[in-house]
Image 1 (tube, rainbow, N blue to C red):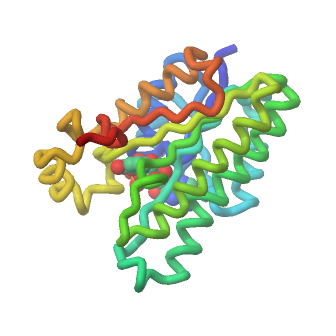
Image 2: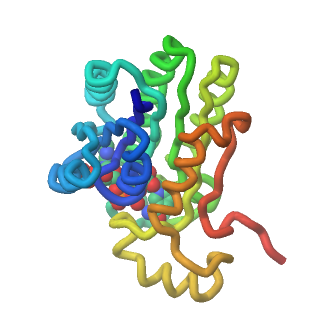
Length: 244
Ligand code: NDP
């Protein structure tokens, strides 16, 4: 039987790119939150399973694991990809608690506790791999996106915690930190980013594509990084490097 990959937020953007990459070699469970149309078009293209799941909701997380268990009886890879941007970019001096709560619940609490469920299952199996899609915002402060940055910085610690806890049990946990990737999430500011990239923001001088992130997941899924537990892969065109 092909290995089983659960990918959250796979109806669009980066998660979809990961699902398309893995579909030829894996049974893929692709989750979506509201865009059934997008999820169905992925299903038509890749013959994956689709499942509605709001990662911020505990009952949805349990239902996703139960669905995967009933359908395939195992999980070999969890990709914590689902995430949201703040609805409004507001200065850190003005940003609201409401927005903070929304981002923390979806971007941090959701994947942290979904990982807890998957990790317990993988411990029963004695194997598994877990990937988190965080962001360069885990370390790069944007003063008008504080809640997003804080959620991603917390998510990076979730990776460290599970990577340490699970490494002795043949379960590897990895973090992928994308830079600026062309998806719906950044559509409203794509032009601004293109101008900044032309001005030197990204050493490799181009915006990333979902396929760039998907290739990094492919390497992990194929076991090429299995002696690199807890590794952080910066898929950002070199943005993280300091220059002088
Ligand atoms: P998109 O907005 O293009 O896609 C988001 C996906 O997540 C969709 O499949 C959406 O489902 C799903 N989703 C949204 N909210 C929830 C929720 N509460 N529960 C479950 N699924 C949800 O985003 P990207 O592809 O750009 O981002 C994917 C991940 O990559 C995010 O974690 C993001 O923070 C991160 N990232 C993105 C970067 C970028 O430049 N684009 C850079 C660095 C990191 P539906 O289609 O049903 O709405």
